[in-house]
Image 1: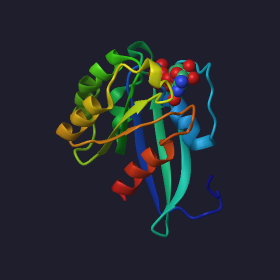
Image 2 (image 1 turned 120 degrees about the horizontal axis):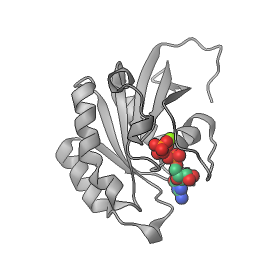
Image 3 (image 1 turned 90 degrees about the vertical axis):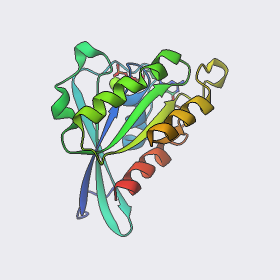
Length: 173
Ligand code: GTP
Ligand code: MG
């Protein structure tokens, strides 16, 4: 996961947003450290992790920011979005409400971030298919209407996590 001695050509800031407990921190843990925890604590304030990758022979450092979904634990919004070139808008496929809140998150994002920011909609916890409350088609349709990329992921099973980040980072590049 990235050679620290490597010279960095680009640093891309990507922000994770979405309701509490949708799995933002575990998506990040999976991507940055290939780790996953079932008893993950709610995030307080802001955390970030990095992973360096190579895109078209250039080394790109992805600096991924993670904040609390819970309003009372959130940090200053404008600072969080400042300089972000990518965003992952996450909901939980087993909790309809987390998908119904996506338009609000999108509104906040569009209100604070650069207008050229690359956005991907992510339906996480695809491993819990038997508890699904959000049909894939609903999300696909919403993403299409809003001009967002879309993928379903599982941080637990490591499904599509890599692809989700690559989609955003390659598009930024
Ligand atoms: P806040 O920090 O409060 O905003 O929450 P969060 O979005 O960061 O959620 P977090 O990553 O802490 O995950 C919440 C819970 O969902 C934890 O119990 C995780 O283990 C679990 N979880 C996260 N991703 C998955 C997944 O892909 N599948 C399953 N089954 N559980 C997951
Ligand atoms: Mg968190």
